[in-house]
Image (cartoon, rainbow, N blue to C red; front, side, top):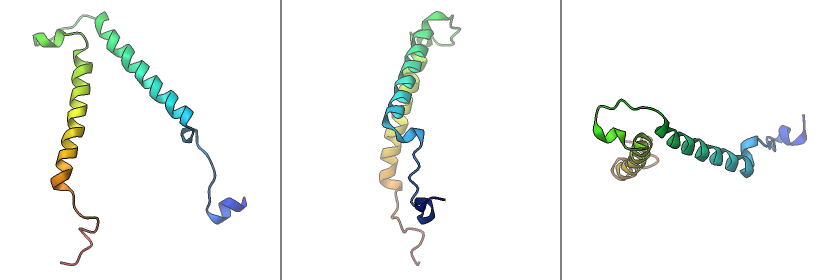
Length: 91
């Protein structure tokens, strides 16, 4: 056992600790999302409503709803947030 491990100072680095690897993952996600967006034009849609036939509708809808959830969570945080010691206080 090394001296660092005995003292509890772990200097072990993981593959996600390197910013280059994180950047590669983010770029790969952008590429996959872009390809899936473009793939929307290569299959026949059997939609229930007319607006579902718009190119990239589900990708755009998913993105807009994700942003709406984040914004709603930030607004709800204003009136739902409690102090850090809320449950530890004496009553």
